[in-house]
Length: 197
Image (cartoon, rainbow, N blue to C red; front, top):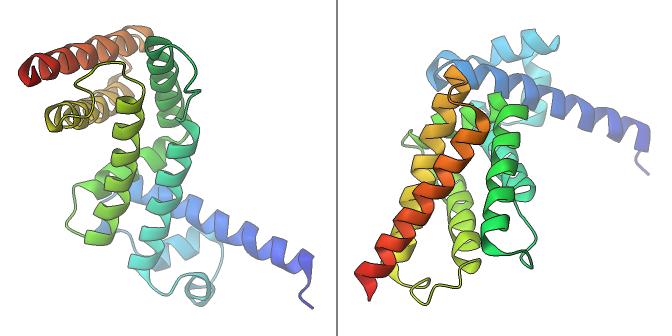
């Protein structure tokens, strides 16, 4: 029978490695982060890191999987709320996540620009989830059209770019940024609705 204490320590060590890796990948390109550097920062041997993750790509992929799953969980809002209130709460939760998990948020979106198909699939899955949540919250008859899906998905790219810029500069205020994002989505979906009708 396995020792629950040892299992808990093992999970804590794994989470520590993921946290350190997230911070490094958030500030450096993938090719400039070395497993040796992660192990040194964690105070462990390279061999121990390889005990948890079979290689650098698997380690990085797990970081992105953890971050995308966590963002999807934290940004889900109550579907019974009115659409605009749900949108406001969802954007606030999104900004909360980006602020509180800034290294992970940056690593996730730095990875999204890369060519690795497994990483791209993880980020796309998150964007698909967020797109569908927004569409599901609409009362617009054109909500299920391909044009509407395109408008919402493009808006998510706007949201990511705006959030990364805001994390760099902290301007405008977070409230002003939220309202800009809301109005931009409403404008995009209104245009998509007109184009569909």
